[in-house]
Image (tube, rainbow, N blue to C red):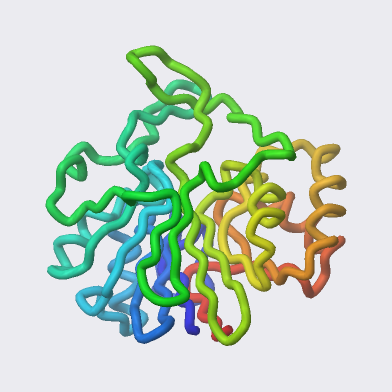
Length: 259
């Protein structure tokens, strides 16, 4: 398996763009999978600079319904004429941050002929490659909405992040999990899937310092290697790195890994 980070909050090389967003290109099982598309078309410009032809992508996945993961999807659908775009049926619901700002997706995605709402809680894309809905993950650890909200029946309610999806690839006896922002709680997600490798954001960027010790202690108990960035936050990453050592790694635009 080979993973390319097409965009993240920081860049690892000259000529590559960074933004508050996430996009990964995954090569596994003979497939090219686009996991999220950042906030803008910048991910596509980076792909071109990295020598990646997005027209060859076989499957696109939207991890959840926030602009910083799906803002570039319309550009992807222009560049690629064949790939389906898998998403939660809840991804295109309205989503707002703590200040009430709209952080949802472009309305042009609604009803797009390539958009495929997942028809089941677990969907097999190919042998060993499955998508899992948020409802499959129980929440023994608290995962507060942090002020984020959605509309249900015209009423503003705290977001329960039912629109999240997780990509699990089982390859060569290992479980490799991709999670866009882990809004349902990074400890809940790791505890449910028990992956050998987890790639994605932890959404700890606003976690107060006194909230990090129990998270670090719990993460260290799993035999998982973590590759993280985006919404994890620099201060949280530094704290976790100090406790987890080589179990934790950072990624940025231009990062490439082979697992």
